[in-house]
Image: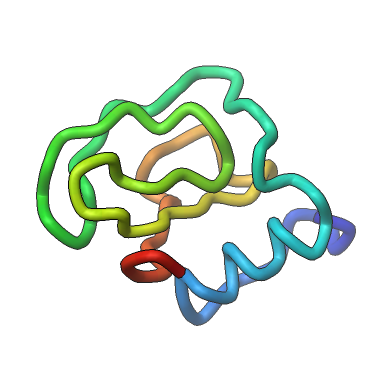
Length: 80
Protein backbone atom coordinates (compact mmCIF):
# COMPACT_ATOMS: atom_id res chain seq x y z
CA UNK A 1 0.00 0.00 0.00
CA UNK A 2 2.22 2.72 -1.41
CA UNK A 3 5.40 1.20 0.02
CA UNK A 4 6.03 -1.41 -2.63
CA UNK A 5 4.16 -4.01 -0.60
CA UNK A 6 7.13 -4.31 1.73
CA UNK A 7 5.32 -2.96 4.79
CA UNK A 8 5.33 -5.06 7.92
CA UNK A 9 2.76 -4.36 10.58
CA UNK A 10 3.39 -4.95 14.28
CA UNK A 11 -0.27 -5.54 15.08
CA UNK A 12 -3.72 -6.14 13.66
CA UNK A 13 -4.67 -2.63 14.75
CA UNK A 14 -1.89 -1.21 12.56
CA UNK A 15 -3.20 -3.19 9.57
CA UNK A 16 -6.79 -2.03 10.09
CA UNK A 17 -5.71 1.58 10.71
CA UNK A 18 -3.78 1.53 7.41
CA UNK A 19 -6.76 0.06 5.54
CA UNK A 20 -9.04 2.76 6.94
CA UNK A 21 -6.55 5.55 6.21
CA UNK A 22 -6.13 4.42 2.60
CA UNK A 23 -9.84 3.78 2.03
CA UNK A 24 -9.48 0.05 1.38
CA UNK A 25 -11.49 -1.30 4.34
CA UNK A 26 -14.56 -2.29 2.34
CA UNK A 27 -12.64 -3.43 -0.74
CA UNK A 28 -13.50 -6.95 -1.84
CA UNK A 29 -10.97 -9.76 -1.69
CA UNK A 30 -10.42 -11.41 -5.07
CA UNK A 31 -10.89 -14.80 -3.38
CA UNK A 32 -12.67 -14.73 0.00
CA UNK A 33 -10.93 -16.56 2.84
CA UNK A 34 -12.58 -19.27 4.90
CA UNK A 35 -10.75 -19.08 8.22
CA UNK A 36 -11.26 -19.27 11.96
CA UNK A 37 -11.65 -16.06 13.92
CA UNK A 38 -8.40 -15.24 15.68
CA UNK A 39 -10.37 -14.27 18.81
CA UNK A 40 -13.18 -16.81 19.31
CA UNK A 41 -12.21 -19.55 16.85
CA UNK A 42 -15.55 -19.51 15.00
CA UNK A 43 -15.29 -20.28 11.27
CA UNK A 44 -16.01 -17.27 9.07
CA UNK A 45 -15.85 -16.21 5.44
CA UNK A 46 -13.77 -13.05 5.10
CA UNK A 47 -14.88 -11.19 1.96
CA UNK A 48 -13.42 -7.70 2.45
CA UNK A 49 -9.98 -6.39 3.47
CA UNK A 50 -11.46 -5.43 6.87
CA UNK A 51 -13.93 -7.91 8.27
CA UNK A 52 -15.65 -8.36 11.63
CA UNK A 53 -16.37 -11.85 12.92
CA UNK A 54 -20.16 -12.32 12.88
CA UNK A 55 -19.94 -14.32 16.10
CA UNK A 56 -17.87 -12.11 18.43
CA UNK A 57 -17.26 -8.86 16.50
CA UNK A 58 -13.46 -9.19 16.38
CA UNK A 59 -12.15 -7.08 13.50
CA UNK A 60 -9.63 -8.71 11.17
CA UNK A 61 -7.62 -7.09 8.40
CA UNK A 62 -5.33 -7.91 5.53
CA UNK A 63 -3.65 -5.44 3.18
CA UNK A 64 -4.32 -5.69 -0.56
CA UNK A 65 -0.66 -6.59 -1.13
CA UNK A 66 -0.96 -9.58 1.20
CA UNK A 67 -4.49 -10.66 0.32
CA UNK A 68 -3.32 -13.74 -1.57
CA UNK A 69 -3.13 -15.84 1.61
CA UNK A 70 -5.13 -16.03 4.85
CA UNK A 71 -1.89 -16.44 6.83
CA UNK A 72 -1.44 -12.66 6.53
CA UNK A 73 -4.78 -11.82 8.19
CA UNK A 74 -4.35 -10.14 11.57
CA UNK A 75 -6.86 -9.47 14.33
CA UNK A 76 -7.27 -5.92 15.68
CA UNK A 77 -9.64 -6.89 18.50
CA UNK A 78 -13.34 -6.97 19.32
CA UNK A 79 -15.28 -3.99 17.92
CA UNK A 80 -12.06 -2.19 16.96
